[in-house]
Image (cartoon, rainbow, N blue to C red; front, side):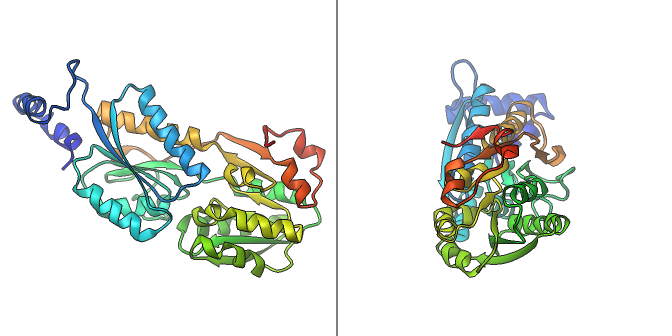
Length: 329
C-alpha cells in the first residue's frame, strides 16, 4: 500500500496521524527539516517519440511549479508490451506515491497491475474504451488522467483542403492499439462526409511501417493517427510518401517535425502539464482519482511544414499558410 493511501487512512484518527508522522520522520528520513516530504513517482512511458516525451516533460514541470518535491523512477518500455507489464508489476511492489503512465499500452499495464496506488495517464484517446476507467466522467477506482483525443474530422478536412483532388486516403496504424482503432473509426466517418474513401494497412511493430505504407498502393493521400507504433517509425512512412509524391497529414505535431505536411494537433507539453496539475491535487490535497473525471484539452494549433509539402510535390494553399499557428522550418 502506498504512503499516500496510508496518509488517507490515518486522517480518520488524530492519534494515528501523529503516530504515522513520527514513524515517517524517524524510520524513512524522507522529510526535510522544513517538513516537505519527497514523493516517489514511477513514470512508465510506452515508447520514445516527441509527443510522448513532451507529455512527460510537461507533467514534471507542473509538479515543479506546484512545489512538489519528487523523486522519479523513469522507465521506457521501448514500444514493447511485455516490457510495460514487467515495469508495471515492479511498480506495484515498490513504495510509490503515484504512477504516471504515457500512452494507452502503458496505462493498461499499470491499471491491471497496480490496485492501491494512484495511477495517472496521458496520451490516451478514450480511457473508457481502453478499459482504464468505469467511465470518463466517473473513473471509479485509482486510475484517471488526460485524453489526447485529437480533432480527427478537422484533420481530415485539412487533408482535403491540402489535396482537393484526393479520393482515397491511406491510414497506417497498429492493430494492437485501441487508441488507433477509435481514430480510424472517426476518420471513416469524417471521410464519408468529405467524399473520401479510407484504405487501411496495419502493423504490429515499427519495423513493418515501410511495408505497410507501400501496401496501400495508389492512394491519393495518407493520414497518420496518433499511433505510438507508427509514429516511432514515421521516417519509413515519410520516405515512401516522398517517393510516391503522396501528401501526409498527421494526428499530432511529432510527425510534422519528422516530415509530414501538417496537422491540427494538441500541444503535448500542455497536456502533460494538465496531468501534472491533477497529480498535485492528489499528492497535496488528497484528491481521490475515483472522483476525478478524465480531462481533455481543447488547446489545438495548425502546424505546417512547407519544405515537406514541397518534397511531396504539394503546393500549400494560401488558406492554410495564412492561418498557420506554427511553421516548421
